[in-house]
Image (tube, rainbow, N blue to C red; front, side, top):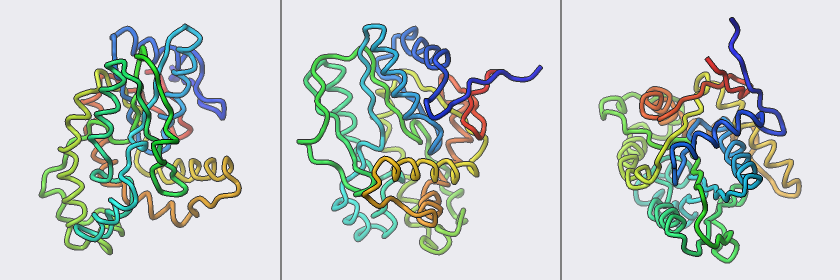
Length: 271
């Protein structure tokens, strides 16, 4: 018998699928519900739909992304100068403000007035606090999404051989990948705040290139007067994520509380 699928379109996931995920979070009394999946897998779409559906039920949901807490450009340039040039590029473990993420989540859980950090990807900078979204009161649920939530470090021996052209040409001595691998352990305090984790399991890393380009095209369409990344830039940018993404695909099916397989069209497939 063929598997049943809930397709994702420009309008997002099917309402019954979104409702099922929201119910999963509420049934398990999650304060912080994590959604993890490789770049372009539909995490942000799903989180936004959960928040909208919750509102129709009289509930409040706050959505926070790991992308919201990138280090600022100045801090990354400092890492690029003091550790390795590749750390000036946002994205890989070690380029986020873990303390800011933890403080934001703790403030929301405590019901304190909270400003949600935001990052401008086109400008490649964190927005000033004056432009952060203000939240008053305690939300019924926090949805926290990101591409490498709870991914563990690799064994050091696995880092010896370069995985792709970026590592071979720009990190021949393995300094950057070793730093990022060690940095993964530093996210543990943030991961501990996630009560339940959903993994949107894509068909493999190879699809990320197309998914990420679709994201960039959508970003450019939403901001036609600004310049997003070119296809060539996206192709190179994705290489920054390959190693940890492959580690995610290996480990998250066991680590996540719930795993939903999705196909190349981002259709969640029920077994």
